[in-house]
Image (tube, rainbow, N blue to C red):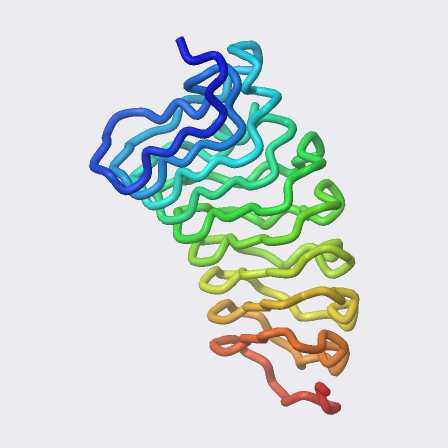
Length: 217
């Protein structure tokens, strides 16, 4: 019965049960973080107009146990920031999020994700922050991530990623935070990393066999 409500924040309480991110008809911002919610209701496309208006959703620091595919299958198309770190969300990330053309921040750190990391860069042209650290992601880092022109944060630390860092890492021109620590990456560190001036770079805990072949700056 609150048709004009746009901002809904119940963070930092002791709430339990199931999150309904579309709890009111005209929401743009919802924050359920830092509670004890155990699950998250699937977004319902035809429930109310908030499916189109929602821009920000934070469900981090709870105890959500859903499969990530169930959460993301019908996520609102105009979402700009989706934050779900520090839960128990499991399963594999979808191959594509092509319908989320406005997404700028995607954070699912410290969950129980598995499988390979999709090539988000092709389907998310506006993605600014990507943080899926401290999960169980495997396989190589997709080649198209290195072609992203918008990423300022790329945090993949604490997974089981393999392969090398290609020379195309220099394409990440606006990068500010670059963390690939504690994976199983190998090969040499490309000198093109030095093209990313001013970024905080963390690469410890991998299997690089040689040091940087040219100055980074």
